[in-house]
Length: 456
Image 1 (cartoon, helix red, strand yellow):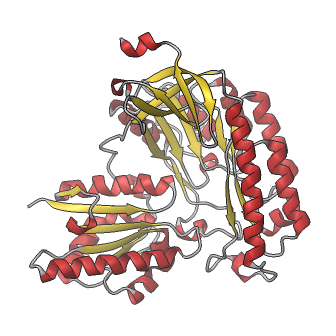
Image 2 (tube, one colour; image 1 turned 90 degrees about the vertical axis):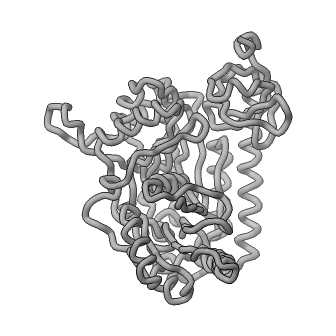
Image 3 (cartoon, rainbow, N blue to C red; image 1 turned 90 degrees about the horizontal axis):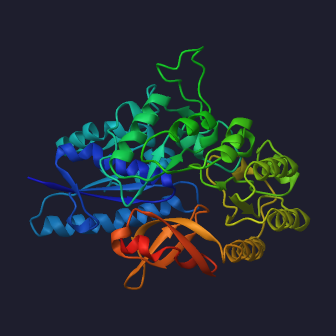
């Protein structure tokens, strides 16, 4: 009998990638996917632990699932298996099992390949099944290749974990040490994605530009690990892949080879998400970022020398313990100086077990809220200015989804902007030149430069 699987994904693109791999892993066991948890035989909550109250969201969702399961059982239906996966599972697995007895199993990011065994154990005993150990081998050695591509773009995880130990971050504790996939495995999956119809791939990693994958078997030489820059050059030769992106990066790992790739490879899109977090050197030191604001400025200068039109994105944390108004102004100054095409900003929230959570001088919530509003206004101003600068230009747009209006489609520019245009649905998955005629805070509008191309 066919069974149904519902996966709810929280957080980053890597969780989206992992959810797809879990679905592919469970498909041979007879699980087809559904978006409706009420009809699912297995529900997996693939969680994130980066933001405050992440665990409370899990408990709230588990409570709703418990009620759905009870309703099914009362109606004579089959039991529902409830699983918690992801970074919250890794960080708080034992506590989840204690506080939420409705959860049948907890599995950390490095143990997804053990899901069939854990599910079988849960079915046999209807008891606890907890697996949050970091295995010696990589989960990538066991997970199947992706079975489908949604639209014409795909995620491809090439690196996991982080060795930087920023004082505010839980990633080293939930995803483990930096681990890179071998080059041969990455290239094989990229070719597979191209065969499935992917035109654009985004390389994923918690610290993706620290990639140091084992060289290909036929590389010769001394077999030294490849950097991300060298890997991107190889991926640019994969037939069918026309666009390459990567995220998320650390300023300390922007080496010469990667910066050069931005200037030399047309397949590498002129968009980079490079978190800086603060414009104050004292706060950066307290965060254990191990770079200064001027270090960041020099990296940006080199990137713009290599690719003058590159669009930049970043992350900012405001209200870090002890942050003064003057230090916050340094961050505002950096935002306005760099001119980000987009950026993400957050109020500092302590994550249990991190060094920053034990720091004194925590700021009042109203101060953090005020600073967040001010930095978001500065970011929005820069983003709208960047978008306005695109008006009158003709940009290649990869169309991949319908727009709000009939006859309209939405795609992505090289700079990661959403672009709306009157395009027939038959152009889904095509890259078409669009003349930009309007700019909005979060998107662009345009018309096809060559309408006959779509008509043909």
